[in-house]
Amino acid sequence: MRKFVAGNWKMNGSLAANEALLAGLEAVPGVEVALCVPYPYLGQLQRRPVGLELGAQDVSEFDVGAYTGEVSAAMLAEFGCRYVIVGHSERRALFGDDDLSVARKAEAALSSGLVPIVCVGETLAERDAGQVHAVISRQLAAVGEVLGRERFGGVVVAYEPVWAIGTGRSATAAQAEEVHAAIRGWLVEQGVQADAVRIVYGGSVKPDNAAELFAMPNVDGGLIGGASLVADDFMAICRAA
Ligand code: PEP
Image (cartoon, rainbow, N blue to C red; front, side, top):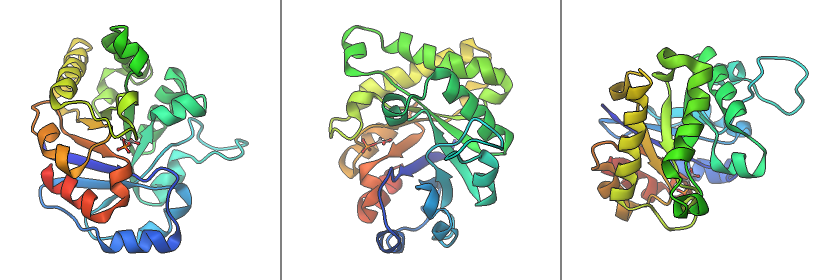
């Protein structure tokens, strides 16, 4: 399976800063690379280096109508998005996204032909309490219930331990592999065609730990936050994939 690396710019950027960043990016042979940018910059990103896919960082669970402030999956598709992140831990922690709304957002994305990048992951307290697998199974099960096993095969799963996001403290390659293998096993149990599902790792991926993480058999790429804002670092991570 071709590795997949997505940059999550989060709420960063400006028209000028984005131009400068894009000037340092290019497609990497053999790796699928996507940029998940703030909504207002989707227009600017219509002009981007050839071969880079476009994505957003959230989507409405609703199709159309009186939902002030929301952005629909069809709108993202109109702007050429192929991917959309759903259930990022920042959205779960700060904006009330819960398992069911994340599942509905994933469904909305698929219905408009987008690929949802479904984020799952445990907090440090949950890890310390031995609840990693319970938490992740619960988060995935909600998505599975809404999508069903056929459509689950069309998502990307991002394992993002909350304690590793933006902290500079990455999971070790062994820790990531252990959870990725468990996620793949869970998908098999649900009857999902699991070998076709990309399971990517996110959480303080940097040029110096990317190769080791991506070498793990069940790590199919990465979701990159902070390092995706530095062209040389993001390119080094993509080349490590
Ligand atoms: C993220 O926001 O998805 C992420 C993984 O962030 P960082 O790489 O900065 O830890």
